[in-house]
Image (cartoon, rainbow, N blue to C red):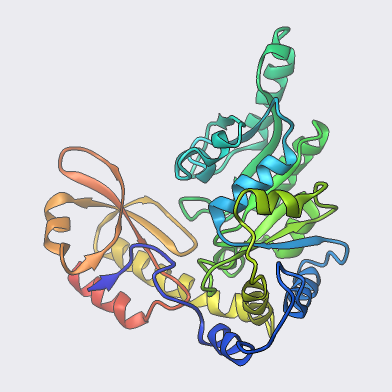
Length: 340
């Protein structure tokens, strides 16, 4: 069986496991107060070029989004996101469960535009009855997006400018950030994110860690943020497990080094699909490849390849996703290409 269903099928990068084993019997303070968390935070601050950043380690992406968004919004505010945004579609209403509405914008290839955001804000405040509505309190975007596309630096600068005009914190979901940083089409760096966003997270779960995400508040975290992390079940007593992993990932640029494999394998697959005449749902520059396939071809792949259903195109065609990771063997990609 070939696995292209997601980018977190494997455990962790060997260097991460090695460090976990090496430090396993050491005794350390709990809840992220250990020296490994402190070391990882300093390395992340250096990578972001943001020495004053507040850095926290949380257990997973949905918990991170729910806690960060709830910590920033007032009780009458909602978060603005693309209709295809992860918080809008794939988090089981986690944001609404915290009492906040997701306010959706149109998207193009997974991205919102500064123009649409500005128009949304102008329309909201132009309505004399807006005091009766859910106020837009922050903006959420993903980089890479849910469909593997990337914001350009110019696009992020324009969105950030609108956010600052309306005093809206900008939050960037970086679940697959490593794959976005190393894409051949990328012109956004971690330092750019630290400059343009108020908060973002660096995904570990999908990029070489067993679990965990690193949240970076580029100015200052909301008051009592750690208390809210614990209240919403995203705090590990053995916080050192996350610190050790991120300390390893941010030693000798390991995070970006291992991300290249996911992009290289995915791009080889995408080129092969095009050469074989398949219709791409869209062209992705990262590790998620979306293709329109005949249902009969998918039946032939059943039991041989794991992939993700994306959407139904028509009675005879389905859009599916093939995802690669830091650990995907090129041999598996070649085997899949041979089947197609």
